[in-house]
Image 1 (cartoon, rainbow, N blue to C red):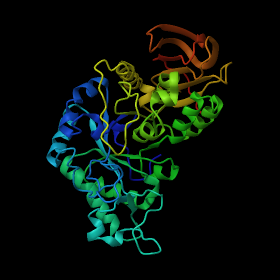
Image 2 (image 1 turned 180 degrees about the vertical axis):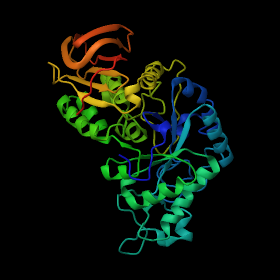
Image 3 (image 1 turned 135 degrees about the vertical axis):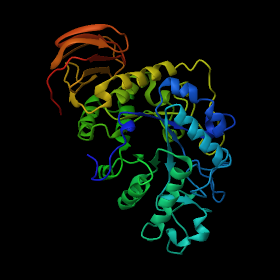
Image 4 (image 1 turned 120 degrees about the vertical axis):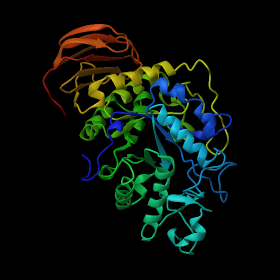
Length: 429
């Protein structure tokens, strides 16, 4: 359902994204140090690397000793803490050689207080009643850009082109995209894609922005899933949301953590407790893009400081890496997750505890059954006309023959994913 003229690049459909916090990823906090992790990430199954802002950070009004990544002082320079422009070019080349793609964080709504434009183009900025630079969202370390100034959009687009031309990046993750006029993004995509096809991810959940962006954040899912894990929300509420998401199948970014969530709202364990794997399976099997944040594969059991150095400690055992590697393999090997499919929510006899859905296309059928509660020994029975023939449960490898349904018992937070290559009928929400 793309706007006329915009086509999503094929390699991004049904893909996965791994968010890189360069500052905290290694003790050195540099591009060169991060590059040592590329073989491991490639082996794990990562397909797209998203780098949090790599631009220099303003000194004026910065928070903490290192400041926010999102308060830049230039759009066309590299944060010297991370290395040089040449270092980043070399890193992108290495990533491409590993068969992965690169997107960078783009902060178009605001800059830091001592950005280059505050001197060269002060007319680009919002002003308060006293005529001083200001920002409308209450962020003290940044100042807002005024897109009613006609000279601003071309300058911003030229800055975006710089990274495509100089570093051969593959797309943008656009910070707080809904705070920037949609018309700007339309022109930015149009102009940037003269250079090469790109992938566009919006940090927003506004259906209007699907006119430009390939993928938007599933913020509502993340908050509601956490609520279900903590028994503050019901499974039925989650089902109702997923029915809405099915209208834009494949267009949402699903995640249990990211840089904001980890630093401000809590670790995976704090947010999801024993239900983390179950919600990760749901995020990975529903059509869309699946996101992991730096260190989730350890698992990351601390909130990383946002404005200070707080390096991730890489335990060599990486206890959660095999699980996420398995999820990546599930997504890559399952045609009805990667490609367009009918989504069918299936009723069970334990509606208040079990989330079950079916994906179906001409090549394949997949059934997911997830116990989204801490209740043990739940007997589940689901039936549907498409549940016919031979299936394999992905995580155990056990074969199952279905005759229009299946009965089984699920323990607390247990999940099952059954996949069949048999062609059946069709149906959808």
